[in-house]
Length: 265
Image 1 (tube, rainbow, N blue to C red):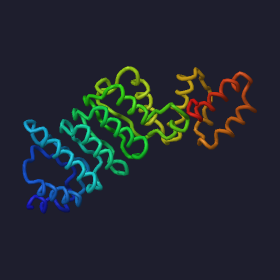
Image 2: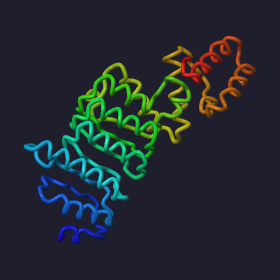
Image 3: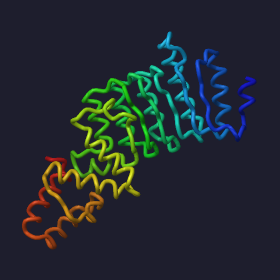
Image 4: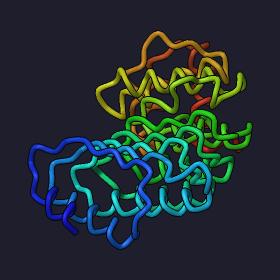
């Protein structure tokens, strides 16, 4: 109670580190509620106890959920080595779906596995457009989870799915080899680079579409302005291609873009 009152309204406090807290969780929630009235933007949660990983799991997830829900100024949350597991990752992904403030989430060594990776990927592709950094090193993610994370930022199954991909996230890792294998590594790295360098989602998806056409169909384009068009405009684009392109380019490009629009059907 005294600690909660001490930090409440403190405008000078910017960073908080919770380390080996073993007190009553109700008291802990009082402190977190008090932090919501401060300007704290970075919070690091150290595992409650390496001796009691299950308690650490419950503690870290409870803390993370409470912070994300209450701390409007929070831009970075570190839960490294907190044993949150797949269920913790799923819980956090649900809370982050509509979050607009958190920019960085560190989850190194949490054993979230494929189940947690898929939940995070679904949140990134379909909902969250605020996170720029999510560190997932050493989480036991196999090829299945890696593909889901790749598709969150680079889904080349169709033009529509590529456009729906996340064009904000700039990193999944500190060490790429601790998260991804060779099969998706280049797609992930180049997609992160596009997200980082481009000033808009349309510009990023244009770069990614050029890669799809080159890698999947062997078509290298020397112009790209029309590739940023919305999906509903593609029929008009194809008409323009038919009128303006030479015969070879027309035959190459029309069926490819139709294929992309229809998802390869």
